[in-house]
Length: 313
Image 1 (spheres, rainbow, N blue to C red):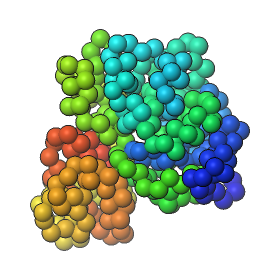
Image 2 (image 1 turned 90 degrees about the vertical axis):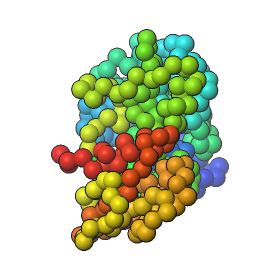
Image 3 (image 1 turned 90 degrees about the horizontal axis):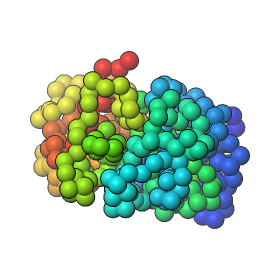
């Protein structure tokens, strides 16, 4: 494949990205969470190229990105809980896992053979503009080699996928910096992956607690691989200090090599997580990570850290 194009966030760049998507090419696009590797979700060959570019296992389903709830309703069945959550949090960092409509026209690889589909309407204005111009459902997992640290800048994408995809649309650093929250609705709404919207906010919208992920169940949605989001270096969690041969990723007021948020701000910490992990991922050094409170966005940060620290396959 020719060298990956870096497209600017102007009329020419957005139109070029939309044209590439319509003609079956892969384009990394900015969202408020992380950069996504976008391809036409209705064409088997395009979806297969996503898996090939990322070297992603094909049993791991993808999120379909759409400009709005009306477009999502054309491919998925929305129940009352899904309507309430989408009405409150879309466009935004929430993915809903819903029954797939038989008329959806989504490539089977997208859902990994499941009867459900993961759908999201991203909040980034550039992504929404591009999705409208492309005028088709777009599958877009994170734009990085499978299992590695998710990209939050265009340069992060190029570091991992340069030469393997057609283009990157440069929308600057991602504001949220951590992937979307994933919820399956149905009779008992269940949290499948914590993410950019805290579970507490979703529960307040629903007026009931979310069921927690079933760790014994198989993969029911994206983001459930045990080892994921990993740097090359080993991670040690809940560390107060660095041991010899380690660098320390801090949180709150403490001495550290890099700090997610000296003020203890979870929003700032989430935005910094993947970029700081990349910066500390130097040859020969392991990464020690300070404790992160398991509240609000801390639940999503800890989820990513636990998966990043899990034994590698």
